[in-house]
Length: 141
Image (cartoon, rainbow, N blue to C red; front, side, top):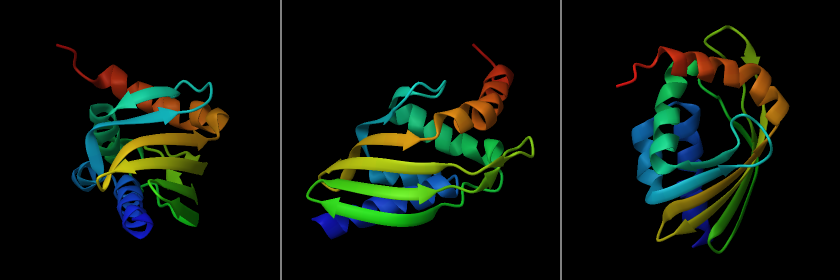
């Protein structure tokens, strides 16, 4: 079980890193949520739809891709913990090199929940302005 779960999680992280929402979606349960911990402007609980939308938007936000470098993967039962570093350039030309620890909970071979820990200060200073700019350009109906 643990090895299969590790494969699903690593497939998801590669999809995240290459802005591939279809592959990411194949790793997630339909009711999956991610919980971005801390007090960042990006913190909070995010639905499956929001996750897939954000991964697709990364093509514009982080045109270089996140380019994850994985440092450790630990799996036990239905949980997988991954430590990695992203190394990207934003669409505004700023480097975005953040460190992450993600705790994945899986069920029936699909990711059900992701608890995400990262440098919230860096995310607020570098990533959030790009996300906010993209939201301002999104037509509202």
